[in-house]
Image (tube, rainbow, N blue to C red; front, side):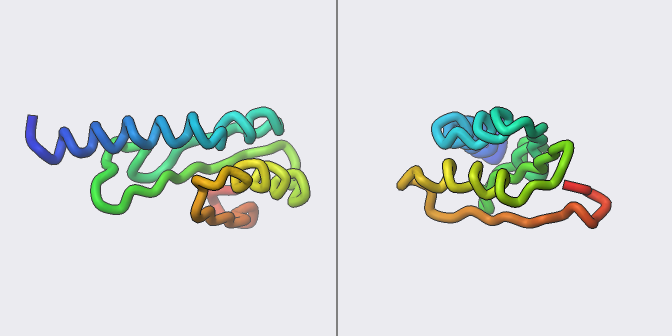
Length: 94
């Protein structure tokens, strides 16, 4: 295996650990959302820019409920940064 493949595999494993430890997927699913990994993580290409992206889908858009989930995630002191985008009016519809 090439070095870049090993790096990508190691970064994928680290990403899975972050997702599990942070509860990000669990909290959204508990709120009734469908969580879809997207971007470099979903394609197994985590290299230099190691961000974890999800599209979150719910039956209705409820900003209060969304920010309650975000509050839960960000209450972990290990979470240093989170970005939230309302893409309901885009083709992603998430």
